[in-house]
Amino acid sequence: MTKARKNAQPRYFKPVFAALLAALIVLLTFTVGSLRIGPITITLNCLPVAVGAVLLGPVYGAILGLVFGLTSFFASFTSASLTTVLLNLNPFFTFLMCVVPRVICGWVPGLLYKALPKNNEPKRLASSALSCALVTVLNTIGFLGLMWVFFANAFVSEPTVIDKVGQQPTGNIFVFIFALATVNAVFEVLINLILGTAVCRALFAVTKNKL
Image (cartoon, rainbow, N blue to C red; front, side, top):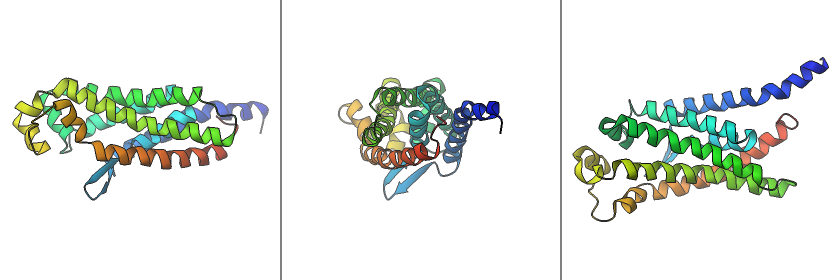
């Protein structure tokens, strides 16, 4: 193998690895989608976004977040979720709700990991864990926050939304919307924290000198 060919390998590694993670996001969205454990539904797409943000940096994290957001938006055209109901009310607001938080949840954790200390294995694992957990936290806060900003009135006035949720809010709508996903969000954070950190640790070992 020539010296030029050896030098080319690391240069192409990041985009190729990012493309594989993006393909995984698309596959998860249109196949498994989420993991159901009794009444709990755990979104799995945050995991490849977290891995990409940690291993590839904030730019690739944002790109993977964009893929996550776009695929979730297009999936809402054929699903029977609350997002689909909101899509019928206002497609543009639903697009922003699906895409913007996902870009942020890939970009900011990538910046965080870049800034945190990584000069030994325990510090690198701790930095990976914090960054992976932050992906889910930002996704949940951003998605539900924009749902509240754009569709708060729909939860009290639109029969299709009330029927989908199962009840009409009687108190603070902000609290009501965030309460819808509280349990799910906790489990998603744990999944990303545990699995994301484990996957990142394994990939750090096999991708040494390529990132």
